[in-house]
Image (tube, rainbow, N blue to C red):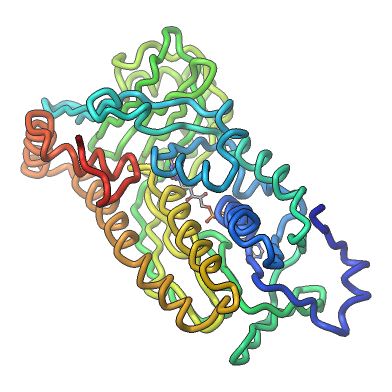
Length: 410
Ligand SMILES: Cc1cc2nc3c(=O)[nH]c(=O)nc-3n(C[C@H](O)[C@H](O)[C@H](O)COP(=O)(O)OP(=O)(O)OC[C@H]3O[C@@H](n4cnc5c(N)ncnc54)[C@H](O)[C@@H]3O)c2cc1C
């Protein structure tokens, strides 16, 4: 069973460091999923999670959002032994329609065309949190330190010593930083971060629908940013609506019926009539990226390494590929955990994928949020060309399905 240490227990152990092979800072989506992947692929390694919140699936990470998982990500979750438990909460995406409001450009991707069972799956992250917590509770090699934070760090050739905010000292061969976009521990390892605000806010909500959604997803570009509708279980849509920051508070404050009228007006009727709306939340959108993937005895993962605009639903899909890569490297040579050679391999292996996804996402945001008539014409011709020419559409489909460069339309 997972060991959960309280402050009283940890006080008694302050004198001698607690030693682990891997310490994961941050027990959110990325940190917990890495812990699970390690229990599957490297069962002999001892692991600790340091999480600032008390809950085993902290609300900060496992909130009311839904995420689109690419077909490639679903394959990874199968390998990590968790997909069977998640599948009942997932809704397959069979078609994606992409359009540009007020212009003729339009394109679509379909699972049938690419001969795959589904383009991806949409799942509410609170279900992911609950299933992860249950799976990890049964892992004897995992210890949770929470609610705790790392307040000091010292590194030697062979290990990192971490002092928690209650004075407890942990020692590890590898510190993995998965604390999300604003990580205090990333600052302790002195890895810089580049930050580019988008001057956009994402409003999210689950919408009930009067008709059946038929597993169709929509991405509609407007002059202020994209609106995405992702099909959910129980005939609901997950809405991600990008708006100017100054409008976000007013949209959150509207009554349910007024909010639904605004969404209907912004999106039109191509997805049907929206008949109800769940809890709304707002996320200011910022591109954050670390130029360094690793530091001595430390590796970055998930939003601590790259926080993306949700326009293409790539953030957690990218994090799953970080997790796959790091856990596979640790499994290949567990006597080398945290060595310079191993961390350098992780950095080299992740850089190209990360840069491609960041570039694609950022280019989508900038091209489709631009109000210039020339850019509007260019992007509409682009969508029109994609619709007409499969060779252009395939790279978009490939990235959407999370197969990167290995996948080719057969
Ligand atoms: C509106 C929206 C829609 C999205 N849609 C998609 C999608 O469709 N598909 C997709 O792939 N991705 C999507 N994403 C991205 C996805 O949500 C993120 O990639 C993912 O949540 C990142 O997880 P993380 O664990 O790296 O960070 P977080 O979720 O931020 O978790 C960080 C964890 O670290 C803890 N922590 C922070 N600081 C400390 C500290 N100092 N000490 C200890 N613990 C700490 C936090 O409490 C938290 O538990 C979307 C994001 C948004 C905002």
